[in-house]
Length: 615
Image (cartoon, rainbow, N blue to C red; front, side, top):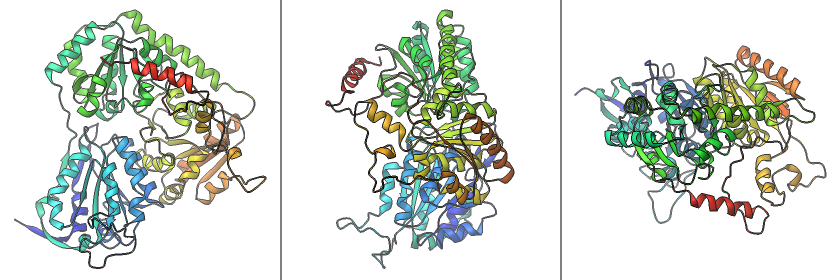
């Protein structure tokens, strides 16, 4: 056996370079195309030196916060349909812990990222070291154990030869559609520098093809029987359809069998907006059109979705006695709520299911309901987007961006009120061109995730929409993107605070408190305001302020041109209305105290939720 004497860090980097992935179109690309790094003691000499040796093949981008880099890697994974994985490394202690939130985002959204936080000395000779947290009763615990709760796979490398057994598991989790999510390898700084005679076979090129599992024939037959017995079936498409590359297959399935189609948050832009079977997005941030069909459907075929509460309206959007049939690569998601589960790749299952169903077709009257209901929702959105006096609404801002975006462009958001506006109001002209991070709804993803998406999506322009609260939460990666030369547009809507949470607070009858700046404690009679335009300019961005809708249209058009021409983020800043929202009419469960006025509506929602059987 031929061996190479390498440090642990050198071996790890060489292994990364030897891994390749097959895209949805069949191209071979690096599985690990980029790395994000902030160096400190714990990774600067071991892993840092190893990365420097191969910087021509594995580009390393320096971020400003570890969380921002992790979110950028998550945005990269989403934009590549989970076919490529960003690598993120940090120093020990606070640097590592800063990554935990990003790991939570990747875990909740089933996005593959590889996290390589530095760790304290495995040899323990110099303990306690700078930035080490000591546990009195367990010497094996370090802060990196916090990653266990938000990792699909976790390992601590305490000997170089452990890489031989753990690296195949790393590749398995990162490329398996049923398990995709963050992988954490904690790397003690002394072990990174230790040498070992690694077999050369470890570094032979390896192509990873995402497996396409086939459905169990009995489950498929049972699903077909349930569909044939249905009078009002509804097809719900989630993110798993996107990652399977099954958008075309799903649409052909709907057309052949006459099934109205609704989309989840992660499944948005899978269906052309004006398709006659498109009922719209489902759930709280969705549309009244899709929700109306969901309420009447006697069978729901949910493909590639984990059926999160915003999709199901806390399990009140469906009829009480609906039959739930699921297709999912992950059995964990497929069996939820007593569903008739078909565990399979989405594209494969839909192909085999349509063959079994043959010429079965839903009733034409039911099929036509999709276009009829969606036309009413479209008219509602048109009214919300229409020009008006006063501060522009989020719906109007989304309308402008939608109007000026093309089918190859990519739109992104995460938290606050914008997900409801983007999910509910966007009219798709391209396929899989939206990323609404609403699995974890992490404030700050809007800018960091846009950086990652811009790196992965060079054929179209990325636009991120966000509120002033998210901007203030995490804006440092604007400088990272500007410095690196990765263009995107960020539209910052300033509505004086956490407006959507104020809406939730006051909408349930609670008193306004600590959300809008006017309701926050201050030592000033006239507190200062943030100059977002000046701040973004100081971070190296091109900046285009706007005063009204006409100004926004001009500013956004100029920002698009500047971002591409100057290869840096362009930021549009506009004041927006603090209390104008797009409403789907669906209910969402939150904890409502008995003494506030919203409790009666909460009780009604709970009663409906408890009547749902899912069988």
